[in-house]
Amino acid sequence: MLEALWIVISRMVIIFAVLGVLYLAIVILLKLVRPKAKKGEAK
Amino acid sequence: MDIYGSGLLGFLHLTWQSAGMLVIAGFLMWLGIAKKMEPVLLVPIGAGALLANIPLGGAAGNGGFLTVLREAGINTELFPLLIFIAIGAMIDFEPFLQRPYTIFLGGAAQFGIFATFFLAYLLGDGWLHILNFTLKDAAAIGTIGSADGPTTIYVSAILQTKYLAAIVVAAYSYMALVPIIQPPIIKAMCSKEERSVKMPVFAGATPQKVKILFPIVTIVVVGLISPMATPLIGCLMFGNLLRECGVTKSLSASAQNELANIVTILLGITVGGMMSGAEFLKAETILVFTLGIVAFALDTVSGVALGKLMYVLSGRKVNPMIGACGISAFPMSSRVVQKLGLEANPYNHLLMHAVGANTAGQIASVVAGGVMLMLVG
Image (cartoon, helix red, strand yellow):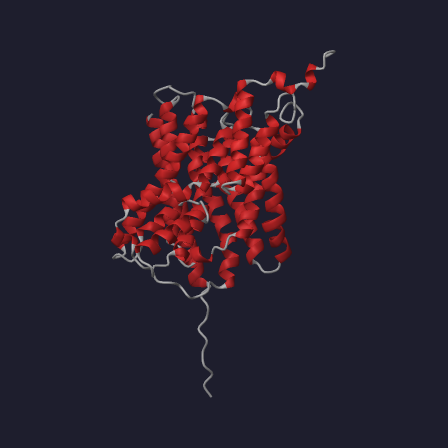
């Protein structure tokens, strides 16, 4: 029973760890590939 | 030699189990055709069950075509992976990329998998020994809570559970029951004030470069941390890359149509072919179905619970109901939340937020499947 409880807790921790890293990767990706603001040409 | 030709008279060999399964096969086809519940799956599954339970028919016996399909597509885990390519090609991840925080709602909504695994294991070998559930059986049963048919099949096939047919039928049947399972739980957990919370609509489009890089980055990140999830996430994201890269439109169209339809037919009829009466009509099957509902319910509870935490932490800017979409039952749970949002406030359109959480749930359920395999398989 304790083994199963450990499996439940450890798996949820691992899932959030994987998704947390993926979240950071996506946030970084979004920052790196941000669309450039169009600048008006001043003459 | 059968000089009396009794081999021609299948009904003489009809057992109560095969008769019962013929009724169940008819019921599944009726649900699909008359009630339009997941028809693309329940009709082939019902047909497969019908063929498998005709006495002396041989469709699911040694060398029968359903057995060949099972060995080629389920035992090798090929069918669910091919389905994932099709699903990846169908999903637009933009609502998720506009709200990447919803990935955590997807994570929370996987709790049902593990809580159900725990319950099943306690009923079986873990403590009470009431049922013949081993650790691997319990893990496979829990995976019904991924609310994701291909992941359920993939994980259950690798775990080699003897309840594979029941688990797969439960997983696909409950997908259609999401509009019945989720609303009472959401209403019990969220007050009308919480359900009325309006969320801003994002107008900005996600850059195409992000959409192209997202599947590649996801494969690398998930694959490196949870390698057992690589085939699942790899096929899902490969399908999405075909969709988004802009230079493989014909492949994307084939994945979304021909591939999806062909594999769905083969998968459905093969799963149905696994429902032989002697294997399927057991007390454990009823328990598997009951635990499947528990898994879906607990997914919803845990998703909404994190949604409520986000509601508080964000200063009441996040509608907690979108947590229920963390399960990957796409797009049913998104529709449920949109409908409940409009009921609470006629101007409350939550659909894109809900879809964001729903697609995040798709990724999270694949990760959960891989994590389950990593530690139990």
